Amino acid sequence: MSFPPPNPLVPNPPQWLAEGARHLWLPYTQMQTTPMSLPVVKTDGVRLTLADGRELIDGTSSWWTAAHGYNHPHIREAVTAQLQKMPHVMLGGLAHEPALTLATRLAKLLPGDLDHTFFSESGSVSVEIAMKIAVQYWINTGVKGRTRFVSFRGGYHGDTLAAMSVCDPDEGMHSLFKGAIAEQLITDLPTTPEREKAFDDFLARHKHQVAAVMTEPLVQGAGGMIFHDAETLRRLRRACDRHNVLLILDEIFVGFGRTGTMFASDAAGIVPDIVTLSKALTGGTMALAATIARAHVFEAFLSDSGSKALMHGPTYTGNPLACAAANASLDLFEREPRLEQVARIEAQLRRELEPAKKIPGVVDVRVKGAIGVIELAAMGDLNVLKRRFVEEGVFIRPFGKIVYTTPPLVVEDADLARLTSAMLKVVGEQAAEVARP
Ligand SMILES: *Cc1c(COP(=O)(O)O)cnc(C)c1O
Image 1 (cartoon, protein in one colour):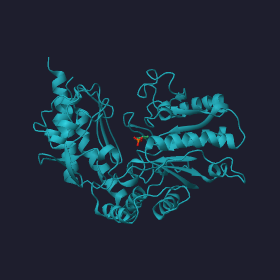
Image 2 (cartoon, helix red, strand yellow):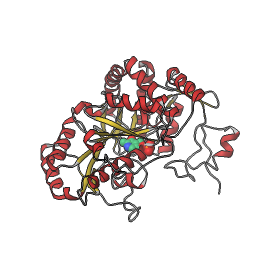
Image 3 (cartoon, protein in one colour):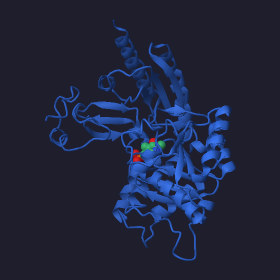
C-alpha cells in the first residue's frame, strides 16, 4: 500500500520526509488519503520556513502554544543555560529550583488560594490528574460514591480515556468507544438564566454521585471555538457552591492571555477548585502541564500517617528544562505588554473579519481576544482549503465547520492582515465553488 499521497506543495520532499512519512503515525489523520505534511526546517517569530526556502505566516501558534512567537531568545537562553547545568532529575526525593520557582509563581499568578501545583507533561494527563484529585478528595473526606463528572456538550479535554469521557459525546467518539470509557453526565452549559435553573436541577438530582463539574472557561476550543460569557462561569460557580461539588476549569487552551485576561477565569472573577494548564505554559517550547488545586482540596490529602497521599507520579514530573522554559515565558508575560497586544489583535480581527459576514455560506463570524473565527454552513474539501492557504503564504488549519486563526500574541499588524485577508479570500473562493451550478 502506498501512502501518503504526494503533495503538490512538496514536489521534492527531502529524503528524511520521503522515507520517514511511511513510518510516522500522525495525529487524527487518515494516513492513506492525507497528503504528505509540509517539511519545516526553521521557525522565527511568526514565521515557519519550509525545506524549499518558502516562508509561511503561522496563524495557529502550533496548536495554540507559541504565545511569544517561535524562538524567543529569552526562552532559548533560559533552556540552554538549564541544559548545561542539569537537564533532569526526578522529583522523588530530589528538589530543583526551576520546578519550585514555577510552582511559587503559578500560586502568585492564579486567583485566590489556588496554591498547590502538580506537574505533568501533557494537557490530557493534567486533566486525568485533576479528575483523580477530585475523586480522591471525596474519598479522603469520607464521602462515598462521588466518582462521576459533569461536563458539557462542545467540550474538549484531551485524548486519554478518562479525558475523552468528559469531551463532547460526538466529538469524543463516545459511541465508537462505548464500554472503554466511563459514562459521565454531559449536559448543556448554563448560558442563560433559564438554563441556570435547568442546570441547578440537574446538579441537585445527581450530586450524590458527582465528584466535580468540569469545563473550558469562555471558549470551547477544539470543540469548534464556541464562546460563552463570564456570567455562565459565575452560574457554574454558584451551582457548585450550592450543591457542594468541586469545579474544575480546564484553562489549557485559554490560559496565558489568549482570551484577553491572563486566565479566562479572571474575566469572571471566580476561583475554581482545580485548574489545568498546558499549551502556552512554556511559550510553545517544551511539553509541560500543571494541575493546580486550592488549599481546601490540597488539605484533604494531608494526614499524619502515609495514607491519603495523591496517588500519581509521572516519571518526568517537573522536568527542569520544561520548567525553565515556563519560568522564562512568565518573565515575558511580566516584561512585555502581552495583554495589550491581545487587545490590539482583538480589535484588528473584529475589523478585518467583519466583511466575511457577507460571504454566502458564512453563518457566523466571531472574535474573542486573539481568536478569530469564520464559521461556515458546510466545509468544503479540507485538503483543498489547506493547500490554498499555503499558496497564499499562510499556515491556517480549518477543522469541523470553522476557519480560524489563533496567531502568536506578538503578531504584527501587517502579518495579521495577511492572515485575515487570506481567510477572506479562501473562504470566498469556497463560497463561489459551492454556488457553481
Ligand atoms: C489541547 C487541550 C487538552 C489536551 O492537551 P494535550 O497536551 O493535547 O494532551 C485538554 N484540554 C484542552 C482545553 C485543550 O485545548
